[in-house]
Length: 388
Image 1 (tube, rainbow, N blue to C red):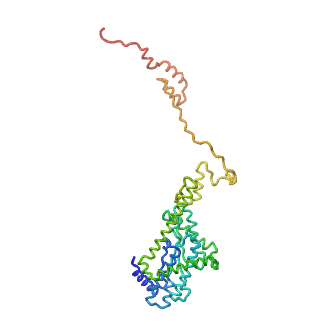
Image 2: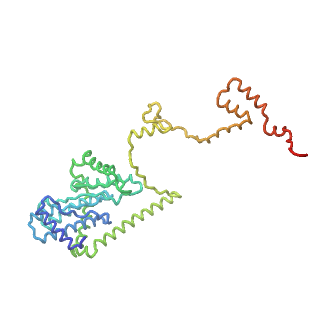
Image 3: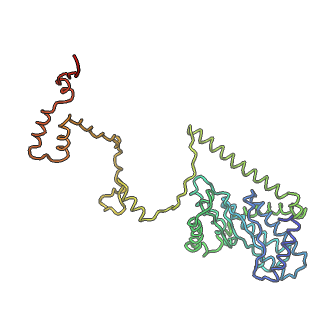
C-alpha cells in the first residue's frame, strides 16, 4: 500500500499503541507467501527474519523500556508455508526456532526465554495441489501437515489446511470439513503430542539444520549491509525471488518434458490424465444406493439374500459373446377389406361374435351382389331417346 519507509513507520506506531493500550493484542504477523512466490528454504528463513528485524529496529528507535520491548518481541508471530520436501521442511522450522532465539538474544538483549519463543502458524502450500487427479492432493496435504507437527521443539501453533479440490474451484462445506477432520484425527487419535522431540540427537537432522542456518546467516548479512528498507527499494529481494521462481518453473518443465519423453519411448501414444469430475455429493446415501441397485435391471440389491450373491473367491461369470439386442419385429399387415357387402360381414365378425345365421346371410348377400366391374359388363347398352 505504501513504500517501505512509510510502511515501517505505520507498523511501528501500531505496535507501540497496541503494546500499551491493548495488552492482549498481537499486532504483527510476518509474511507467509514467500514459498508461493518462489523462495527457497534459505530465502524463506532470511527474508522473513529480515522483515521482523527491520520492524524491531524501527520500534527500538522509540527507546522503549526493556520490559515493553520484550513484550513487543513476544507478540510478533510468523506465518510460513509448508512444502513437499518433508525432511527439508522439518529442518527449516527447526532452523527458524534457533535463528530467532539467536537474533532476539544477541541483537536485542532479550533475556526472557519465553519472550524469545518462535511462534508461528502454517498455511499448507496450495501451490503444490494439482488439477489432474485431485484425489492425490489428500496425501500431499497430510505430508505437509506432518512436517510442521512432528518436531515438538518447532511445532506450529496453528495449522490451516486447504481442501483437496482447491485446484478445481472453491471448496464446498463438505470439503472444508474433511480438512478439519484431518487435524482432529492427528491431534486426538494419535500419540504425537505425548512424546518429546523425536529428532533431538539425529545427526542427519542436525547437519541439515546447520547447513540451512549458515546459508541464512550469509543472506541476512548481505541484506543487512545496505539496511533492509534500501534492499527492498532497490529490488534485491524481489529480484532474487524472481530468479528462484524461474529456476523452479524450469525444473518443473524439464521434469515434465523428460517424463513425456520416457513415456513416449515406451508407448506410441501416451494418454494424458484428465481431471476427475467432482460430484455434487461425493458419497450418496445408503438408502439411495439400495434403491438404485434394486431398481436397476440385472443388478442385485444390497438387501438380497446371501445365497443369491456371488462370493468374492468365486470365478467371474462368463463373458457374453453375442449381443442381447434384437431388432423389433414388425406387426403383421392387416388383410385388405372384402369387396362390397362382405366388408360389413368381415368387420362385424372380426369385432364381435356373429349372431345366429349371420354367416349364411352374409354369404348369400355376397353371392347375390356382383362387383362393379362385373355389373358394368353384364349391363345392357343404354338406349338413346329422340329421333332415329
